[in-house]
Length: 397
Image 1 (cartoon, helix red, strand yellow):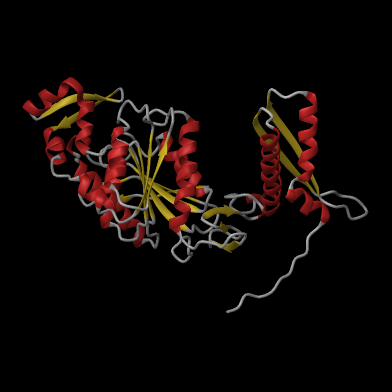
Image 2 (cartoon, rainbow, N blue to C red):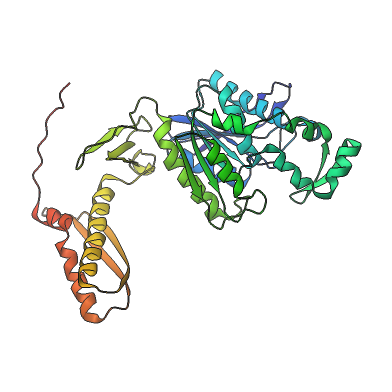
């Protein structure tokens, strides 16, 4: 991944500091990440999610809103409307450089900002929000017991995330102008809502309200026991993986991601991302395949041999589950690991697939032994060991 400086001028005349994270090849699409209230472009969530998307061939811009991080301006003069203008200004600057945005990602109040600004960015096809409030006035809860003073005097010092900030009443007055419910209902973009059920800063009821207000296509993902800021690296990484996988359906306009394949029919075609990246489509499912970076790929999906190994592992696990259920054996969990090795030597050798099966449950030795034997009965095992015929022809048209 390469990171370039991408500064631009806001509609209010301030220089805003941005960083453009780019994959090792020509990006197949561009996204923007809007950080949380009083955070910066260097937040854990912003950095990790941007990096995860670049691994899938997507360029990501993350920038500091007015008065935060390395951007110019006074934070005390900022408003939510100003944040939305900053976001639209970033999209305009990207488009002027030939990098029109397809995906918006917003964290907390940044999530509210992308919901508000999406309508003014025609190129955007999908929006993902993390821990976002449904009503932007929710942010005033963070002002605590200083809110009355702020409203009376027009200005007050407040503690936000352990740091002192000066806030002005103009910020609160501006919040009254925004009808997020109407905006969400008229979003006309694919929407992904991610939220932790134990979020102590923005309660999970906000996610429910956003989801209910939105029209399809919309999706919801629970971030389980994550905190609001996704401070644990594993939580940020999980959110990043989910967003990257979900967004892949909407990022490339010239691929028919909605095409449903017939049963037992698999289609694999190039995405245009990197040299080797492909999208694999079967039925209603789609995912990416690729080659590792050391051979010129993006490393954004399993390799062809890994897909074959995955087929063997999946078939093995399913076959053992079917057998255990038929026998009524107490198998709690089945895990199959598969390693593929190309044998080297003077004479041609068949490829070697090594399986390691982990069986959990109250099983005696005879049960375990029998289940290991049954692994050889899996249909994919039989296909690989007996060989297969392949017929190839050019498609009509």
